[in-house]
Image (tube, rainbow, N blue to C red):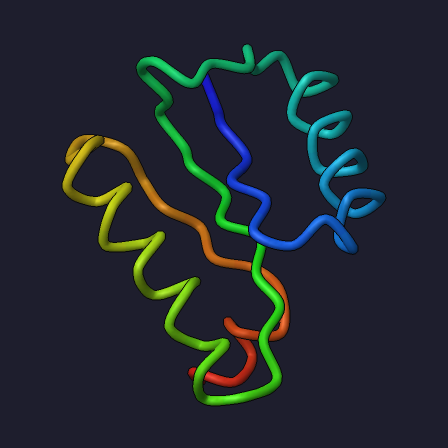
Length: 79
């Protein structure tokens, strides 16, 4: 099971592609008990970086057994 947390609507086409890839690989979309959470981020300023980090903390706390995958430019900025 997987869930995509889309933090910026501008990234919708990429999220749709990710959704299609997971579905075609046999995964089920679920917001209740996901095995994987994909946090799709985009932030270009320090202030905007807070939102993705807060989302990751939220999902880690809410779904402690889930694996969290962070993608997008915020993930690149934190390397």
